[in-house]
Length: 322
Ligand SMILES: Cc1cc2nc3c(=O)[nH]c(=O)nc-3n(C[C@H](O)[C@H](O)[C@H](O)COP(=O)(O)O)c2cc1C
Image 1: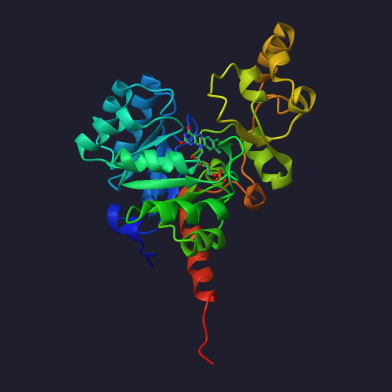
Image 2: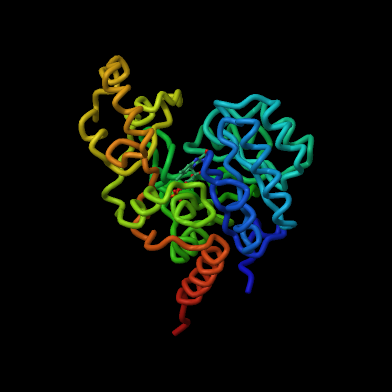
């Protein structure tokens, strides 16, 4: 079985399913497993830590001959990080969060597929100007970083599809089973990017206690905040907060970002808690569809399961001529 779309045609893959470039968590093993399973696996290059990227890209190139890609945070990397990754010949490079214009140049020059994730209409237009081959429309249902005051996936995807014309659009945010993949295709998307659900796989570089927390959580347990980035000392631009599970630290410091930044004792207590992966403090990145994370599985099996569910959902949708 295949589920042909503009994405699968462009990249020669079986299913229109892409695993998110989760910085530091989506390593070579996860990307290779997703690609081997018929999707497109993305390595989470994040801020472009050279040693990490080198290790994980060696792993992915040794593990699969299928197409794979790598993603970077546009606000955090320079051109040399992208050029370094391109030397491993990825099929695709994803740029997210920030101005992709200058980073897009080496990607296009190398002939790799340029994917740009966007969170509002202006970012979508800028991505098209930068020459994106594929857009990812990330709705505010998403786990991890997202737009401040973002639009939900169901509403945002058609807007980007209309803006993008012939450029394929992938839906991201709150997609965690085949029903949601089918819904994204019905919205006009050519595929999906899934993060939260792929965190709960054996191949993801996620501590066991965090995956367990994801299995036990529901969407209502999540909240968009900057508090945990401030605690971590992560210098994300303010326009990109993150959706995480609620925890005690967040309950205590919600709405007090400036106060927290200046409270050395609180920051030091956070660092101590983080060193022992204390779930009462550390961020567990999770999207609103975290309810659908019910077990830790193998990534390749998950791709097959999502594809089968998508097929079943699409077959259920019929129109009858009386
Ligand atoms: C743990 C985690 C880390 C993420 N890191 C990145 C990242 O480094 N770069 C990026 O483009 N997106 C990142 N994302 C966001 C994804 O690209 C994607 O938009 C999102 O996961 C889709 O929503 P979902 O989590 O509901 O599937 C991350 C998401 C998660 C859950």
